[in-house]
Structure formats: structure tokens, C-alpha cells
Amino acid sequence: MGGRIGLASKPGEGTTATCNIPFPVYNGPVSGALSATSLPRRARLANKSRETKKTRPPLTNTANSETKQSPTSSLSTTTSSEPEIHILLVEDNPVNRKVIALAIKKLGYTVSIACDGQEALQYLCKASKETQPTAVIMDCQMPNVDGYEATRRIRDDHGMFNEQTRRLPIIALTASAIKGDREKCWAAGMDDYLTKPAARDALERTLTKWTAVKRPHELGHHSPVDLR
Image (cartoon, rainbow, N blue to C red; front, side, top):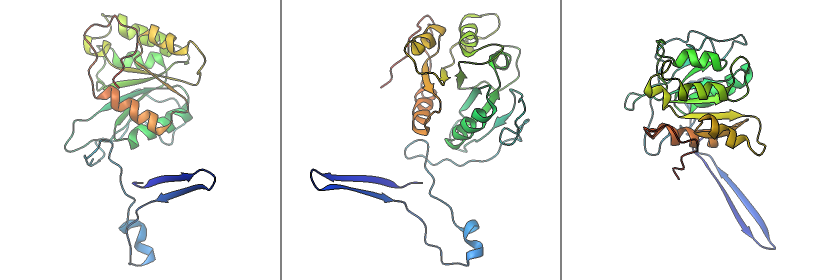
């Protein structure tokens, strides 16, 4: 909302918390308040404004449908001055799909959906006519083909996937945070790791990191790249 939260603490005296949110002053009739005013917009990247518009109607309604969706369905947001950044979300739970896709869209990205690993493989294969994503968010635990197996096949199958697809950043998404999970993701060829529910700040930070760089040409490494 474009505001600030502050804390000022003195030992033995206490802490003062402040929350300042800028709102425009509106002096018109109450009936026109919603259409005449808006909340402050947060830019995804510093010092850049993003103008959004709908590019094409989604093939499947990701916001209202509980049924299985086609991997071609998308929530799309584009900019007039910046190249489009396209995220493929692979998630089998319909509620998680809605929540995560909406969060990604609000960060200014285009989102396409695959409901399991097999759909993700079909979306990304050489024969697919779908838009090549900039990065993939891959749920680890899914029916049919899970995220680990899908990632291994993307990394290793030269016949099914072209070189650009094989180098895509793949971000693991899992509800499990026990010891060894991260290592399992690295071993499968994933690049980063988010736990569910993914906080907006963590999601934004991770997507910004992996959409701002290109993967190395050599795909033999199975450890995360630290860009800090």
C-alpha cells in the first residue's frame, strides 16, 4: 500500500509502533469514491512504474474454477515498457493454484498453470506451442509425475526439451521443511526452494532473483546459485 511501519524502543520504557499509509484526499460525493480514488501502487522493481493490461482472455478461469485446468490457461499481465516475464506454476492443489497464481500476478508477472508434473512436461516439450516461461515454480509432491521427477526429466532429456528449456530456473515449492528436503531438490536439479505457504516477500525476492539472471550453460551443477 506504499506505507511504512516503524518501531522505536527504549529499555525499561517500552516500544512505540507507528504505521503510516498514504491515502489521497477525496472531496467528491460518497457514491463516486471507489471509482475516483485508488490505493498507492507498489512497483515490482525500484524506480519503475508498471502499466498493466489484459493481453488475451484465459483459456481456463483460474480464479473461479475448482476443476482441473489446462496448462495453457493463464493470468496475464504485461507492460508497455518492459519485456514480459512469464512464470509457469506447477501445482496440483486447486486452492493453492488460485492463491499462488494471484500472488504472482500481483507482482507483475504473467502466469500459466500446469496441474501436475506430466502437464508441465507437455507444456515445456519441443512439440508444445505454448509460450516459453522465464522461470518455473514446481510443487514437489504431485500425482502422476511429481516435481522431482519432472525436474530431472527437464534437465536430462535432450530429445524432449530444447537447450533453453533445460536451463530454465526451477523453483521448488513444498509444504515440507524437514532436514534433507533442500538437498533432495538440489539433487533433482532445482535452483531454489520455497515452503508453503510462501510469504509474498519471499516469493517476490525469489522470482526477482531468478528472472534477472540466465542459468549457466553447463547444467552439471546440482547446487543453488547464491546471487546475494
